[in-house]
Length: 68
Image 1 (cartoon, one colour):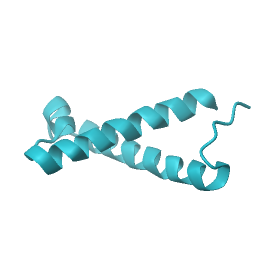
Image 2 (spheres, helix red, strand yellow):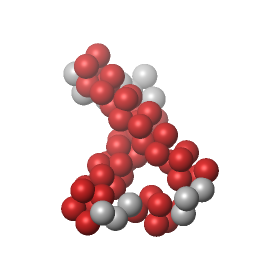
Image 3 (spheres, rainbow, N blue to C red):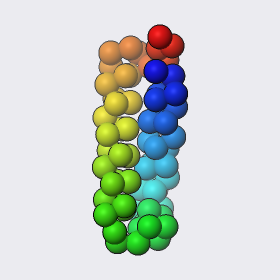
């Protein structure tokens, strides 16, 4: 479970940085790396799922990492 948590954390951080770049410089890093392909859509979906999981984890577990 800890590995999944770390993957979701990294994806959420990447998503936050990407949105910061979009807001500050109108630069979408994900589109730059992957172009306008289905892979870009998949990355955006995974980032959204990660953010949803992090929200769930924060509300349910108060942000503690469950190791079991």
